Length: 419
Image (cartoon, rainbow, N blue to C red):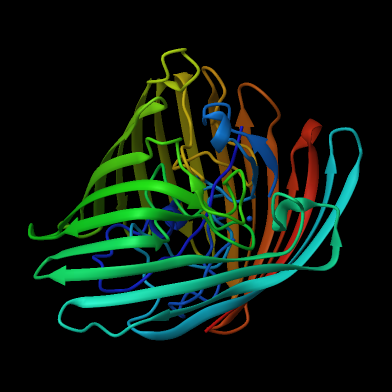
Protein backbone atom coordinates (compact mmCIF):
# COMPACT_ATOMS: atom_id res chain seq x y z
CA UNK A 1 0.00 0.00 0.00
CA UNK A 2 1.06 3.56 -0.59
CA UNK A 3 0.07 7.07 -0.06
CA UNK A 4 -0.18 10.43 -1.77
CA UNK A 5 0.54 14.12 -2.02
CA UNK A 6 -0.10 17.81 -2.06
CA UNK A 7 0.91 20.43 -4.43
CA UNK A 8 1.82 23.56 -6.38
CA UNK A 9 2.85 24.59 -9.86
CA UNK A 10 4.03 27.40 -12.15
CA UNK A 11 2.31 30.45 -13.54
CA UNK A 12 -1.28 31.54 -13.09
CA UNK A 13 -1.63 32.12 -16.82
CA UNK A 14 -2.10 28.41 -17.50
CA UNK A 15 -5.81 27.55 -17.18
CA UNK A 16 -6.18 26.35 -13.63
CA UNK A 17 -8.38 23.33 -14.18
CA UNK A 18 -9.81 21.54 -11.19
CA UNK A 19 -7.96 21.95 -7.94
CA UNK A 20 -7.77 18.31 -6.89
CA UNK A 21 -6.54 18.88 -3.35
CA UNK A 22 -8.90 21.79 -2.80
CA UNK A 23 -11.87 19.66 -3.85
CA UNK A 24 -10.72 16.72 -1.79
CA UNK A 25 -10.38 18.93 1.26
CA UNK A 26 -14.16 19.13 1.35
CA UNK A 27 -14.38 15.36 1.75
CA UNK A 28 -11.24 14.62 3.70
CA UNK A 29 -10.90 15.82 7.28
CA UNK A 30 -7.14 15.50 7.04
CA UNK A 31 -6.91 17.52 3.91
CA UNK A 32 -6.17 20.92 5.33
CA UNK A 33 -4.63 23.96 3.76
CA UNK A 34 -2.59 25.91 6.24
CA UNK A 35 -2.24 29.56 5.37
CA UNK A 36 -4.31 29.06 2.26
CA UNK A 37 -4.83 32.78 1.82
CA UNK A 38 -1.28 33.00 0.53
CA UNK A 39 -1.17 31.69 -3.03
CA UNK A 40 2.46 30.73 -2.77
CA UNK A 41 2.08 28.32 0.12
CA UNK A 42 2.79 24.68 -0.51
CA UNK A 43 2.12 21.34 1.23
CA UNK A 44 3.86 18.20 2.35
CA UNK A 45 3.44 14.30 4.37
CA UNK A 46 5.38 9.88 5.58
CA UNK A 47 6.05 6.24 5.30
CA UNK A 48 7.80 3.91 2.96
CA UNK A 49 5.75 1.58 0.77
CA UNK A 50 6.93 0.24 -2.57
CA UNK A 51 4.66 0.53 -5.59
CA UNK A 52 4.76 -2.97 -7.11
CA UNK A 53 3.38 -1.76 -10.42
CA UNK A 54 5.98 0.84 -11.35
CA UNK A 55 8.73 -0.42 -13.66
CA UNK A 56 11.89 -1.35 -11.75
CA UNK A 57 13.55 1.94 -12.63
CA UNK A 58 10.59 3.87 -11.24
CA UNK A 59 10.00 1.98 -8.01
CA UNK A 60 10.77 3.98 -4.93
CA UNK A 61 10.11 3.83 -1.25
CA UNK A 62 7.40 6.47 -1.28
CA UNK A 63 8.44 8.81 1.46
CA UNK A 64 5.24 10.48 2.34
CA UNK A 65 2.34 10.71 4.57
CA UNK A 66 -0.64 12.42 3.11
CA UNK A 67 -3.09 10.98 0.64
CA UNK A 68 -5.67 12.62 -1.46
CA UNK A 69 -8.38 10.47 -0.06
CA UNK A 70 -9.70 11.03 3.39
CA UNK A 71 -6.33 11.94 4.72
CA UNK A 72 -5.33 13.41 1.50
CA UNK A 73 -3.12 16.24 2.40
CA UNK A 74 -2.78 17.57 5.86
CA UNK A 75 -0.58 20.35 4.76
CA UNK A 76 0.06 23.56 3.09
CA UNK A 77 -1.08 24.46 -0.35
CA UNK A 78 -3.64 24.12 -3.11
CA UNK A 79 -3.18 22.05 -6.20
CA UNK A 80 -4.57 21.72 -9.67
CA UNK A 81 -3.52 20.58 -13.11
CA UNK A 82 -1.46 23.73 -13.27
CA UNK A 83 -1.24 25.03 -9.76
CA UNK A 84 -1.42 28.76 -9.15
CA UNK A 85 1.58 30.34 -7.44
CA UNK A 86 2.06 33.86 -8.60
CA UNK A 87 1.36 36.10 -11.57
CA UNK A 88 5.00 37.13 -11.85
CA UNK A 89 8.06 37.87 -9.77
CA UNK A 90 9.65 36.01 -6.88
CA UNK A 91 7.84 33.44 -4.71
CA UNK A 92 8.77 30.59 -2.41
CA UNK A 93 8.57 28.99 0.99
CA UNK A 94 10.68 27.96 3.94
CA UNK A 95 9.92 24.56 5.42
CA UNK A 96 11.08 22.81 8.62
CA UNK A 97 10.16 19.23 9.48
CA UNK A 98 10.83 16.68 12.22
CA UNK A 99 9.80 13.01 12.24
CA UNK A 100 10.07 10.13 14.70
CA UNK A 101 9.09 6.68 13.41
CA UNK A 102 8.90 3.18 14.85
CA UNK A 103 8.45 0.19 12.55
CA UNK A 104 6.65 -3.10 13.17
CA UNK A 105 9.81 -4.59 14.76
CA UNK A 106 10.22 -1.75 17.24
CA UNK A 107 13.15 -0.09 15.44
CA UNK A 108 13.12 3.69 15.92
CA UNK A 109 14.48 6.38 13.59
CA UNK A 110 14.52 10.17 13.67
CA UNK A 111 14.88 12.77 10.97
CA UNK A 112 14.84 16.56 10.74
CA UNK A 113 15.31 18.93 7.83
CA UNK A 114 15.12 22.53 6.72
CA UNK A 115 14.55 23.57 3.14
CA UNK A 116 11.97 24.94 0.77
CA UNK A 117 11.87 26.52 -2.64
CA UNK A 118 12.61 29.80 -4.38
CA UNK A 119 11.08 30.60 -7.74
CA UNK A 120 10.74 33.36 -10.29
CA UNK A 121 8.09 33.85 -12.98
CA UNK A 122 8.89 36.18 -15.86
CA UNK A 123 6.23 38.67 -16.87
CA UNK A 124 4.28 37.68 -20.00
CA UNK A 125 5.50 39.41 -23.17
CA UNK A 126 3.55 38.96 -26.40
CA UNK A 127 2.11 35.72 -25.10
CA UNK A 128 5.45 34.34 -23.90
CA UNK A 129 6.58 33.83 -20.32
CA UNK A 130 9.09 31.71 -18.42
CA UNK A 131 9.60 30.41 -14.92
CA UNK A 132 12.15 28.60 -12.79
CA UNK A 133 12.06 27.17 -9.25
CA UNK A 134 14.96 25.97 -7.12
CA UNK A 135 14.20 23.37 -4.40
CA UNK A 136 16.41 22.29 -1.51
CA UNK A 137 16.43 20.16 1.64
CA UNK A 138 19.15 19.92 4.27
CA UNK A 139 19.77 17.96 7.45
CA UNK A 140 19.15 19.74 10.74
CA UNK A 141 19.97 17.34 13.59
CA UNK A 142 19.14 13.77 12.54
CA UNK A 143 19.12 11.83 9.30
CA UNK A 144 18.44 8.28 10.47
CA UNK A 145 15.00 8.54 8.89
CA UNK A 146 15.62 9.24 5.19
CA UNK A 147 12.17 10.53 4.27
CA UNK A 148 13.40 14.09 3.77
CA UNK A 149 16.62 13.40 1.88
CA UNK A 150 18.21 12.06 -1.31
CA UNK A 151 18.66 8.46 -2.47
CA UNK A 152 21.97 8.52 -0.58
CA UNK A 153 20.30 9.92 2.54
CA UNK A 154 21.96 13.31 2.08
CA UNK A 155 21.00 16.95 1.64
CA UNK A 156 20.40 18.06 -1.94
CA UNK A 157 19.22 20.87 -4.20
CA UNK A 158 17.58 20.69 -7.62
CA UNK A 159 16.28 23.00 -10.34
CA UNK A 160 12.84 21.43 -10.32
CA UNK A 161 11.10 23.93 -12.59
CA UNK A 162 12.50 25.58 -15.71
CA UNK A 163 9.95 26.16 -18.44
CA UNK A 164 8.82 28.40 -21.26
CA UNK A 165 5.12 29.08 -21.78
CA UNK A 166 3.29 30.37 -24.84
CA UNK A 167 -0.32 31.57 -24.84
CA UNK A 168 -2.68 32.30 -27.70
CA UNK A 169 -6.29 33.28 -26.98
CA UNK A 170 -7.62 30.34 -24.88
CA UNK A 171 -4.70 27.97 -25.43
CA UNK A 172 -1.49 27.65 -23.44
CA UNK A 173 1.57 25.46 -24.01
CA UNK A 174 4.21 24.88 -21.36
CA UNK A 175 7.49 23.11 -22.21
CA UNK A 176 10.30 22.15 -19.86
CA UNK A 177 10.27 21.20 -16.16
CA UNK A 178 7.21 22.00 -14.08
CA UNK A 179 4.97 20.93 -11.23
CA UNK A 180 1.84 19.09 -12.35
CA UNK A 181 -1.22 17.68 -10.61
CA UNK A 182 -3.47 15.15 -12.26
CA UNK A 183 -5.03 11.99 -10.75
CA UNK A 184 -2.17 9.64 -11.72
CA UNK A 185 0.77 12.04 -12.11
CA UNK A 186 1.16 14.64 -9.39
CA UNK A 187 3.53 16.55 -7.15
CA UNK A 188 2.69 14.52 -4.04
CA UNK A 189 4.20 17.32 -1.99
CA UNK A 190 4.43 15.36 1.22
CA UNK A 191 7.98 16.00 2.37
CA UNK A 192 10.54 18.63 1.58
CA UNK A 193 10.73 18.50 -2.23
CA UNK A 194 7.69 17.62 -4.40
CA UNK A 195 7.63 15.64 -7.62
CA UNK A 196 8.28 17.75 -10.69
CA UNK A 197 8.12 16.57 -14.29
CA UNK A 198 9.82 17.24 -17.60
CA UNK A 199 7.74 17.35 -20.74
CA UNK A 200 4.97 19.47 -22.20
CA UNK A 201 1.50 20.52 -21.10
CA UNK A 202 -1.11 21.87 -23.52
CA UNK A 203 -4.39 23.31 -22.23
CA UNK A 204 -7.41 24.86 -23.88
CA UNK A 205 -10.64 26.39 -22.53
CA UNK A 206 -12.50 27.38 -25.70
CA UNK A 207 -15.55 25.53 -24.34
CA UNK A 208 -17.23 27.51 -21.57
CA UNK A 209 -16.65 25.99 -18.14
CA UNK A 210 -14.43 23.27 -19.58
CA UNK A 211 -10.67 22.87 -19.76
CA UNK A 212 -9.02 20.28 -22.00
CA UNK A 213 -5.51 18.96 -21.36
CA UNK A 214 -2.86 17.08 -23.27
CA UNK A 215 0.46 16.24 -21.64
CA UNK A 216 3.48 14.09 -22.32
CA UNK A 217 6.01 13.48 -19.54
CA UNK A 218 9.40 11.86 -20.12
CA UNK A 219 11.36 12.56 -16.91
CA UNK A 220 10.70 13.29 -13.26
CA UNK A 221 12.40 13.95 -9.94
CA UNK A 222 11.32 14.51 -6.33
CA UNK A 223 9.81 12.68 -3.40
CA UNK A 224 8.44 9.62 -5.22
CA UNK A 225 11.20 9.16 -7.79
CA UNK A 226 13.78 6.42 -7.39
CA UNK A 227 16.50 9.09 -7.28
CA UNK A 228 14.78 12.22 -5.92
CA UNK A 229 17.77 14.51 -6.46
CA UNK A 230 18.10 14.05 -10.25
CA UNK A 231 15.76 14.02 -13.23
CA UNK A 232 15.52 10.47 -14.57
CA UNK A 233 13.39 8.73 -17.17
CA UNK A 234 9.73 8.27 -16.31
CA UNK A 235 8.47 4.85 -17.45
CA UNK A 236 11.71 4.10 -19.27
CA UNK A 237 12.10 5.50 -22.77
CA UNK A 238 8.34 5.59 -23.36
CA UNK A 239 7.28 8.24 -20.86
CA UNK A 240 3.62 8.84 -20.10
CA UNK A 241 0.99 10.54 -22.28
CA UNK A 242 -2.36 11.74 -20.91
CA UNK A 243 -5.47 13.56 -22.09
CA UNK A 244 -8.00 15.03 -19.70
CA UNK A 245 -11.12 17.15 -19.49
CA UNK A 246 -12.38 19.15 -16.51
CA UNK A 247 -15.95 20.49 -16.42
CA UNK A 248 -17.02 23.17 -13.92
CA UNK A 249 -19.77 25.04 -15.76
CA UNK A 250 -22.44 24.08 -13.20
CA UNK A 251 -22.17 25.80 -9.84
CA UNK A 252 -21.07 23.51 -6.97
CA UNK A 253 -20.40 20.63 -9.38
CA UNK A 254 -17.02 19.54 -10.79
CA UNK A 255 -16.46 16.65 -13.20
CA UNK A 256 -13.24 15.32 -14.67
CA UNK A 257 -12.08 12.47 -16.86
CA UNK A 258 -8.56 11.29 -17.76
CA UNK A 259 -6.88 8.68 -19.93
CA UNK A 260 -3.18 7.77 -19.54
CA UNK A 261 -1.07 5.68 -21.93
CA UNK A 262 2.18 4.28 -20.60
CA UNK A 263 3.67 1.78 -23.05
CA UNK A 264 5.06 -1.30 -21.32
CA UNK A 265 3.38 -0.10 -18.14
CA UNK A 266 -0.41 0.35 -18.19
CA UNK A 267 -3.43 2.13 -19.58
CA UNK A 268 -5.23 4.12 -16.87
CA UNK A 269 -8.76 5.54 -17.12
CA UNK A 270 -10.21 7.76 -14.39
CA UNK A 271 -13.56 9.53 -13.82
CA UNK A 272 -14.57 11.70 -10.87
CA UNK A 273 -17.53 13.84 -9.88
CA UNK A 274 -17.81 16.19 -6.90
CA UNK A 275 -20.83 18.12 -5.63
CA UNK A 276 -20.63 20.42 -2.62
CA UNK A 277 -22.79 22.85 -0.67
CA UNK A 278 -22.16 24.78 2.54
CA UNK A 279 -23.66 21.95 4.62
CA UNK A 280 -22.63 18.75 2.83
CA UNK A 281 -20.65 17.32 -0.05
CA UNK A 282 -20.54 14.08 -1.99
CA UNK A 283 -18.11 12.61 -4.49
CA UNK A 284 -17.95 9.57 -6.78
CA UNK A 285 -14.96 8.06 -8.55
CA UNK A 286 -14.28 5.21 -10.97
CA UNK A 287 -11.04 3.92 -12.40
CA UNK A 288 -10.20 1.16 -14.85
CA UNK A 289 -6.60 0.04 -15.39
CA UNK A 290 -5.18 -2.52 -17.82
CA UNK A 291 -1.73 -4.10 -17.84
CA UNK A 292 0.49 -3.21 -20.81
CA UNK A 293 3.74 -4.85 -19.69
CA UNK A 294 3.47 -8.08 -21.65
CA UNK A 295 4.37 -10.12 -18.57
CA UNK A 296 1.31 -9.33 -16.43
CA UNK A 297 3.39 -7.36 -13.90
CA UNK A 298 1.39 -4.14 -14.25
CA UNK A 299 -1.88 -3.05 -12.65
CA UNK A 300 -5.03 -4.66 -13.98
CA UNK A 301 -8.37 -3.97 -12.35
CA UNK A 302 -11.23 -1.61 -11.60
CA UNK A 303 -11.92 0.61 -8.60
CA UNK A 304 -14.91 2.66 -7.56
CA UNK A 305 -15.41 4.92 -4.60
CA UNK A 306 -17.79 7.22 -2.81
CA UNK A 307 -17.10 9.92 -0.24
CA UNK A 308 -19.15 12.48 1.62
CA UNK A 309 -19.02 15.04 4.40
CA UNK A 310 -21.53 16.83 6.59
CA UNK A 311 -20.96 20.01 8.61
CA UNK A 312 -22.69 20.31 11.98
CA UNK A 313 -21.86 23.48 13.92
CA UNK A 314 -18.06 23.42 14.44
CA UNK A 315 -17.76 19.73 13.54
CA UNK A 316 -17.32 18.09 10.16
CA UNK A 317 -18.05 14.38 9.75
CA UNK A 318 -16.60 12.55 6.78
CA UNK A 319 -16.82 9.06 5.34
CA UNK A 320 -15.47 7.24 2.28
CA UNK A 321 -15.46 3.80 0.67
CA UNK A 322 -13.35 2.18 -2.05
CA UNK A 323 -13.73 -1.25 -3.63
CA UNK A 324 -11.13 -2.79 -5.93
CA UNK A 325 -11.56 -5.68 -8.35
CA UNK A 326 -8.09 -6.83 -9.33
CA UNK A 327 -5.24 -4.42 -8.65
CA UNK A 328 -4.78 -0.68 -9.18
CA UNK A 329 -1.88 1.74 -8.88
CA UNK A 330 -1.50 5.35 -7.75
CA UNK A 331 0.66 5.98 -10.82
CA UNK A 332 3.47 8.52 -10.62
CA UNK A 333 2.65 10.35 -7.42
CA UNK A 334 0.15 10.06 -4.62
CA UNK A 335 -2.97 8.88 -6.42
CA UNK A 336 -6.61 9.99 -6.22
CA UNK A 337 -8.34 7.43 -4.01
CA UNK A 338 -10.90 8.60 -1.45
CA UNK A 339 -9.92 6.24 1.38
CA UNK A 340 -6.22 7.03 1.37
CA UNK A 341 -5.05 7.42 4.96
CA UNK A 342 -2.01 9.32 6.10
CA UNK A 343 0.15 6.36 5.14
CA UNK A 344 -1.83 3.36 3.88
CA UNK A 345 -3.91 3.24 0.70
CA UNK A 346 -5.57 0.69 -1.60
CA UNK A 347 -2.67 0.83 -4.07
CA UNK A 348 -1.12 -2.49 -5.05
CA UNK A 349 -3.37 -4.85 -3.04
CA UNK A 350 -5.48 -7.34 -4.98
CA UNK A 351 -9.26 -7.08 -4.43
CA UNK A 352 -8.75 -4.53 -1.67
CA UNK A 353 -11.65 -2.85 0.12
CA UNK A 354 -11.43 0.15 2.45
CA UNK A 355 -13.84 2.15 4.61
CA UNK A 356 -12.92 5.46 6.24
CA UNK A 357 -14.58 7.59 8.91
CA UNK A 358 -13.38 10.88 10.32
CA UNK A 359 -14.41 13.82 12.47
CA UNK A 360 -12.85 17.26 12.75
CA UNK A 361 -13.41 20.14 15.15
CA UNK A 362 -12.69 23.72 14.07
CA UNK A 363 -14.37 25.73 16.85
CA UNK A 364 -11.16 27.55 17.80
CA UNK A 365 -9.99 30.25 15.42
CA UNK A 366 -7.17 29.15 13.09
CA UNK A 367 -7.04 25.67 14.69
CA UNK A 368 -8.37 22.35 13.41
CA UNK A 369 -8.09 19.03 15.26
CA UNK A 370 -9.40 15.69 14.15
CA UNK A 371 -9.16 11.94 13.87
CA UNK A 372 -9.48 9.61 10.91
CA UNK A 373 -9.79 5.81 10.97
CA UNK A 374 -9.48 3.66 7.86
CA UNK A 375 -10.41 -0.02 7.94
CA UNK A 376 -8.72 -2.09 5.24
CA UNK A 377 -10.08 -5.50 4.29
CA UNK A 378 -6.50 -6.70 3.79
CA UNK A 379 -3.46 -5.50 5.71
CA UNK A 380 -3.18 -3.24 8.73
CA UNK A 381 -5.78 -0.61 9.55
CA UNK A 382 -4.75 2.95 10.32
CA UNK A 383 -5.86 5.67 12.74
CA UNK A 384 -4.58 9.23 12.34
CA UNK A 385 -4.75 12.03 14.92
CA UNK A 386 -3.87 15.52 13.80
CA UNK A 387 -3.82 19.23 14.66
CA UNK A 388 -3.27 22.04 12.19
CA UNK A 389 -2.73 25.64 13.28
CA UNK A 390 -2.69 28.58 10.90
CA UNK A 391 -0.68 31.29 12.68
CA UNK A 392 -1.28 33.83 9.91
CA UNK A 393 -1.62 34.08 6.15
CA UNK A 394 1.98 32.96 5.69
CA UNK A 395 2.87 30.57 8.50
CA UNK A 396 1.27 27.24 9.38
CA UNK A 397 2.04 24.33 11.72
CA UNK A 398 0.98 20.70 11.51
CA UNK A 399 1.27 17.92 14.07
CA UNK A 400 0.14 14.41 13.22
CA UNK A 401 0.37 11.03 14.91
CA UNK A 402 -0.15 8.07 12.59
CA UNK A 403 -0.97 4.75 14.20
CA UNK A 404 -0.56 1.97 11.65
CA UNK A 405 -1.36 -0.66 14.27
CA UNK A 406 0.75 -3.77 13.56
CA UNK A 407 2.77 -1.87 10.93
CA UNK A 408 4.20 0.62 13.45
CA UNK A 409 3.63 4.33 13.97
CA UNK A 410 5.19 7.76 13.56
CA UNK A 411 4.77 11.35 14.66
CA UNK A 412 5.62 14.34 12.51
CA UNK A 413 5.80 18.08 13.13
CA UNK A 414 6.05 20.43 10.17
CA UNK A 415 6.14 24.19 9.74
CA UNK A 416 5.77 26.08 6.48
CA UNK A 417 6.30 29.78 5.76
CA UNK A 418 5.18 30.95 2.33
CA UNK A 419 6.01 34.19 0.54
